[in-house]
Length: 299
Image 1 (cartoon, rainbow, N blue to C red):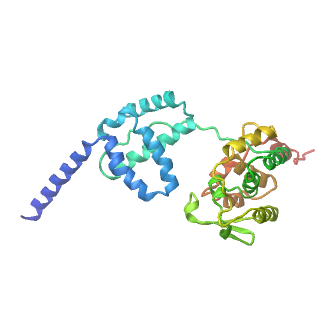
Image 2 (image 1 turned 90 degrees about the horizontal axis):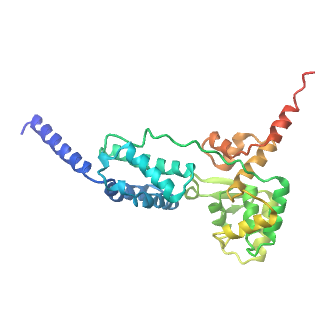
Image 3 (image 1 turned 180 degrees about the vertical axis):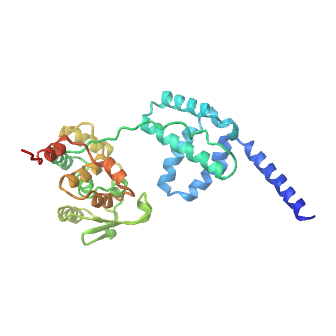
């Protein structure tokens, strides 16, 4: 068999393989190819979040179509049903769009399809949250947390205000990772996959040291893993509305900005990969603009 015949056989075999792939449904591709790959590629927490979305996607009928036959209309119809069934926000729909877009891009790389039907479906414009606490609200919230039945709530909220760390990072803090006034987040705990140093304010250190002296602490600083109910109760007691735990991270960033900390420094402290992401965390406040305009003097 000469080289020309070998090439012809390879082309025939490649066409047969591609034809076989094109005959599989989106459901089969997700379950047999996409999920196993993502399970190995992603961190456990991130994979759990993805798996939740995939389970919902797989519950809709369009996944039983051949993957190569799925059209933009199929995707649009899926989003329509998803909105009606789950009353999801526009931001949540964008997360599903991102998920499906990645699935089809991966299928293109695998040479299973040559077209991504999600690509030209527009993302919804998301309204960024700009809720941050005022000094008065912070004081009221901390006082309410001190009165909470959850004895760890005050220290968890205080840590969020002083460090800007994410909730999952706070409740999984380890005593052994505190060195003097620095706490180290390992790469497996950050979204970027890189380790990050968190500098601890002396007031926070004093409070945490008092907490550790009173409580029996091995290595895990907090036993609590969920404070949603107790945090909500504290917000009600403090008279604070339209506020989520993650907004403490925005409060941290905004407070630094209002105290003239450079935005690049804030970016590093939050562990963001870009300043654009940091800007999304900074709350809009007319007081900042008013202070700025009052600095002008032309007459």
